[in-house]
Image (cartoon, rainbow, N blue to C red; front, side, top):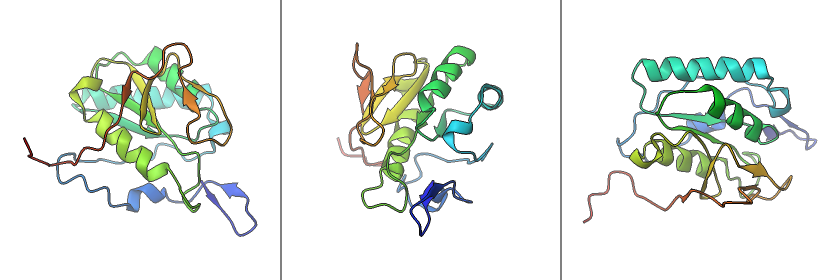
Length: 175
């Protein structure tokens, strides 16, 4: 989502994350696919099912992990749906941004890179669908959005996050 000259926010024609340099140093090979490009409130159970089927197909063909970028209005609902319908052990990570890509302090690129790190982590295998936002890793089953604008909005009130994303330099060989 990006804001236009009047300040209205609408879906971008092209995901700005696809043009970003993520400095993955060859550790991760990204394959990108845009299944649909709709505002988060327009994500229906039918679209969630389409996404679930596509993820299961990717897992069956040997994909090591999946990262989904998603608007935050229905991110927790999609995460929960996918957690209930995906039987694969590959990491499935959903992320989003609380600030549009054209705003100062946009968190989208950082959250995307953190989600990739999480999906590439062996520790994420078999954990079900995960939500990664603002350096925190939450299970889809218990995460909830607690605020409409705060970047630290996704929380698991009863249990807390299941993990934290730390700054890891991809490709580093320091002992």
